[in-house]
Length: 587
Image (cartoon, rainbow, N blue to C red; front, side):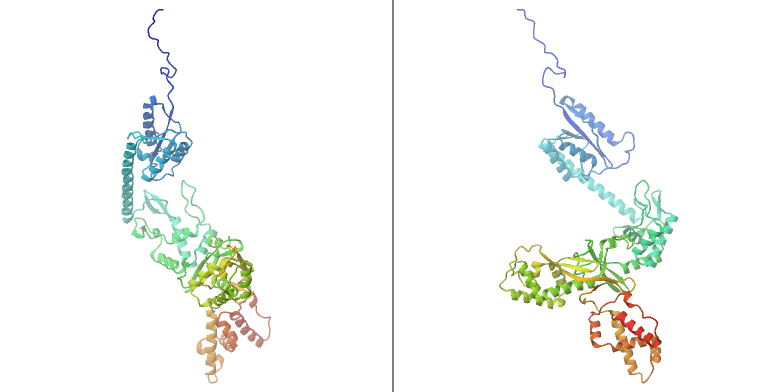
């Protein structure tokens, strides 16, 4: 047999010598640029990063590395956040096992935050994905690579923070010099050469808004008037924003924006600006004084003079929450509970079921009804039996609840507020009734130092107390909640008290007038004789009526119930005038 020499192996299609084919290593290239500047160029920074990464992957071709065709580019996105569209797509593909290695140009392209990098590395490790930086040659699969990478991230984060400080310092210095630092210009101004210039047409609109507020003294009324006149906010070019009706919040901001005074503000300080003022000093100060006078406070705690006792408990008939608010008029504070739709919308566009009720009347109804329940031993006993409560000292507890009801009015506002929030689960203001949902378990323990009832399955158990009540209009626009079942405790009517005091003063003048007629006495105090005579008659009210007025328990009449009598004789007319005055003030 003839020897033919060594046998040559046949070449395989993959260029090897019969060995197993190399496994494909899928590489995802991630690129990022913080600003949008230069992205419109044909070959920008993102393209340069991707080209460098593709060249690196090509150098690893012998190891089976290939670049995935998917583009993970975040242009104009900061590296200080993980909420980046391309990064989120990359993480989703990693979770779907479609990526083996993530390739970036530099580490800070992936993130500048050490905490965010730790999260990203955890995601990479969970999916068995490697991480490579082209210019820094890192491999996160080794402990040394992780250490070096973390050190670099410390410096990257430090550089980011220092850069932010430099930018903030530059902005502060520029604003102190009165420079406008960008953003969308306010109504009344345009931008030219990075400076604010006055738009004459819009400036007239701004002055009109300021002037009308000094006359109306109400932002709500001002908004309604501007909407009717078709005055819109400033449209923003290039974006679907602006150009709509001015909201109440935007009007409040406009009326307090010192930009219209030719000033630039920064962190609570104002500096003379390099732009022209639109609003004069006198008009500006008038508007600010009106805002301070009409400002609605939001303090509903127990330390205020008249705290809102039912905050968070009141709802209207549609289930919408009613928030406490108040208005100041000539030094007098008027408190209300108002539906959210009336707060967010104008009265003309709010639903018909939206409510606005005086806080004192509503709180009086709730407190009176709860006190009546506490003093009703039969009702308390029935509720205890219904709830399955067992107590060896039932009489003691009933007496304690009754005593609490009797001394309720003497408790401090903070104590009453805490008790109401413990006892009452919900208050619903309906058109004809006020529904008070009372929790049974706290009610059975009311007035006791510790829980002595053994209550069976009463968690969340409630009982509903219904009080017939209607919202009626008295005067021009004031709404009062009138309890038709029982007299509601209210603050005494100051106007009515002054009228009674005046009536008794006139009576003393008549008694000491030594025969002077009412016409002469009226002239001495500078009043019309008719008014003097009608007020004088109120001094003869019975002591019972006067006592009711002093306690604020007089019934209230609606405006429709005060109509005058048909035409009668002159003497009868004088009598009816006096009676009408009494009906208006006393009911």
